[in-house]
Amino acid sequence: MFPGEMFTGFGSAIGGLAVVWAMFHQYIPPQLREHVERYTRKLVNLVSPYIHIMFPEFAGEKLNRSEVYTAIQNYLKENATERAKWLKADSVRDSSQSLILSMDDHEEVTEVFKGVKVWWLSNKTTPKNMSLSFYPMTEDRRFYRLTFHRRHRKLITDSYVKHILTEGKAIAIKNRQRKLYTNNPSQNWYYYKQTKWSHVGFEHPATFETLAMEPNKKQEIINDLKKFSEGKEYYTKVGKAWKRGYLLYGPPGTGKSTMIAAMANFLKYDVYDLELTAVKDNTELKKLMIETSSKSIVMIEDIDCSLDLTGQRKKKEKDDDDDDETDNPVKKMEKEEKKGSKVTLSGLLNCIDGIWSACGGERIVVFTTNHVDKLDPALIRRGRMDKHIEMSYCCFEAFKVLAKNYLDIDHHPLFMMINELFDETKMTPADVAENLIPKSNNEDPEIGLRNLIEALKAAKELEARNKAEEEARAKAEKEEQEKKENVEKEAVKESGKSDKEVKENGVISGGVAASEVKPNGFAV
Ligand SMILES: Nc1ncnc2c1ncn2[C@@H]1O[C@H](COP(=O)(O)OP(=O)(O)OP(=O)(O)O)[C@@H](O)[C@H]1O
Ligand SMILES: [Mg+2]
Image 1 (cartoon, rainbow, N blue to C red):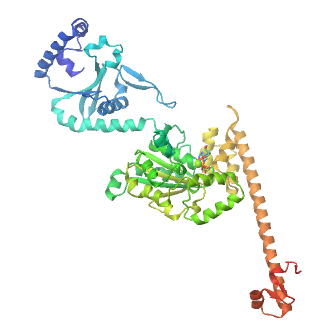
Image 2 (tube, rainbow, N blue to C red):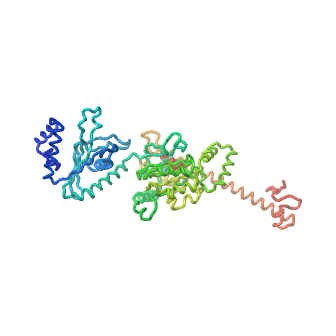
Image 3 (tube, rainbow, N blue to C red):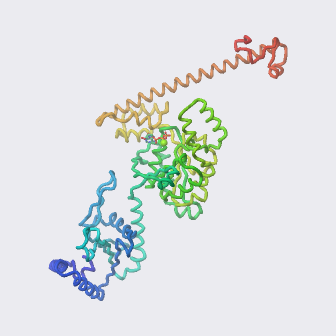
């Protein structure tokens, strides 16, 4: 029973009183009712040992919903809904969520905090001018009322309320619809008054459970992320900005992008997909970084292709010029894109670990690349990119995750053969997955496994053929080199000059240069 109501007589166990209360509300005019309630409250205050705190949805003149009310609502949804008998169903948040239930109006629940019992009532008041409104429902003023015994006043006001607010905010972050952002081209910021980032709901299904990789390595990454997300105090203590850099490298189709999605889902962070080629210069990059929120992953995919950040600018420009000569349209397009951006390596470094990186806190920066060797060491040095993770070809352990994902099997007699084939050949998880995908709903898993075995055998044969061809080419080159050397030696012998002289002058008797002598010994 609710203590406040026990003392006012409302809602008591005596059914008769409840009826009187209902009649009171139905038949007594609002003004008179208000008077009666005010004096009753005064009377109750004289004898009641209970304290009530109201938490209105809209406090004062504010048009914004009270943060405190929202935090309490989230807390009660998660912790007290089970005990309520009258519930309200919200719309489902996304396809993976079931109904979201909360306490209905006039419903009350109890909670025990450190051995102390408290009562929560969810209620609403309707202003007097309600009947004049076309939309009476929007006029309702909702509130929560917390009731507790006055001897626990300090505990409740100091600790319990703080606990509710912290928990409520954490629940809101956990349950919020996360977002995937992409940066808008900067010319649109001014001309079209576009925001710097556009977003859509982030609903990638990848998790660490479905990510195929070596289990110890996976666990290490999970532990690292966990330590980071719980490390606020540690980062403050050591005086470091609360951020962490990851470099994911490996061949295409090994799960780098999938890993970023799994990280975001694990940490419940937003994702900012930063397209560097759309950023005009370092100042704009800073502006973009400032507008990222905390609890987010900023990812820059294919960093080696994004800009000339390889530290080998000169050489690269030369290479690109060569490509232009070959009229390669893709290369030309990439070059045009890069020309539009003047973001420099130092500008990027400043954003990821200069003073600018400290804005927002709790952020992870992830770079991905297929060519780690092409990157400037300054960009990926430890401390800047704190963790380098190689995403590699599929191993047997990783295959087992994919078999579970796609075929829903943990064991199969064919696994042994597949294990042996993985020792002998390389295949990316993307290709393994492609072979396993069933073509129809009730397909026998064995078909997928046999497809994979065939593909692995074909890959093994191809590798062997390539290797044989490579060896034959190397052998032919070696033989040619040896022949050339023999010819030179012969020529030296015939001319009577020293080996050194022939090499220096390049001339042998008869005026024919050694380099002009064909490997078969005939002068050209
Ligand atoms: N390790 C993995 N675990 C689970 N699925 C994977 C893995 N690697 C690849 N895949 C599958 O292959 C597809 C391609 O993978 P993903 O895009 O993550 O590769 P990537 O390494 O980012 O490639 P790229 O270098 O081309 O960007 C994914 O949609 C996913 O289904
Ligand atoms: Mg990718």
